[in-house]
Length: 204
Image (cartoon, rainbow, N blue to C red; front, side, top):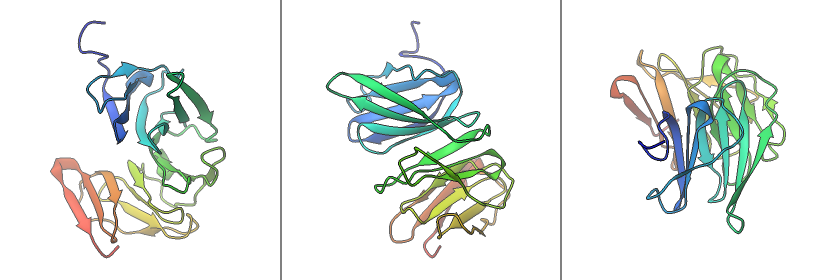
């Protein structure tokens, strides 16, 4: 392989904490940097599934979501310059499009068919949430264990405040598909999607 370096497969997601970063993409592609992105190298996580999302939990640990129910936990061991990889049991074959984690170690994941999963033990086991909607979810974000927001087609926005027991449908007034959501501080929530559309709410 000569160009582009270090690889040429499409990349779907990137996540950074300080100078450590991971990007993931098609055919199991994963690249890693330790210097803020100046240099990248390919790492083999033992899969050829398309990888759709990555989130750095801290500067050494990441969660990755991919097709056919794939969820991975990845730990970088700096002293050995090696990666430890665990395939997490999602109990689904739906494509997983998004994964997120907060400081309390309660990752959430979302995917096709309205699937939402939640873990309270750092991804060792997952509970399927009763989201009640069967449309594909493109992204999900949370900053607390009890609360999560997800977006999908035709301006879809859904959220829960009670660990996924109940969900509220609060669509954005648009027919464009929404691809990404960010839940910020002070109740600021932003979504973006097709045709450059960006929406924000400050009152949930």
